[in-house]
Length: 137
Image 1 (tube, one colour):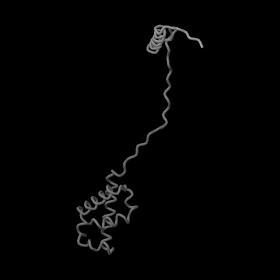
Image 2 (image 1 turned 180 degrees about the vertical axis):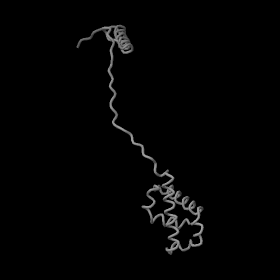
Image 3 (image 1 turned 120 degrees about the horizontal axis):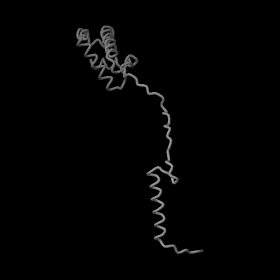
Image 4 (image 1 turned 90 degrees about the vertical axis):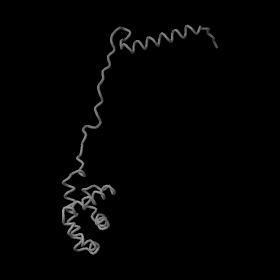
């Protein structure tokens, strides 16, 4: 094995000069021959070609009004025909009024908030809403 005695000062000086030359070259973007280094950059095309935004149908006033009228008419029909709803016959005149429609709307709104069912899916969940309205009227 060979041992070479090199002073530490010379090693440190050569490393520091090499580092300073590298930092000067990267900071100025100029090569050793004096020609500027230019990077060409082509951005990557996006993976998503387009973004679709859908209207929140649950906020549609006309849908809510339509569903409320549907269930108001069903409640009036159930009070007249169904034995479970016969206990609500005294409220029939109230349910036929505008205040009754607002009451049905508020009941449906609370049901939508608690259950997480969308307004447009209320007609599909007909039996569940029938039980809910029977309890809450």
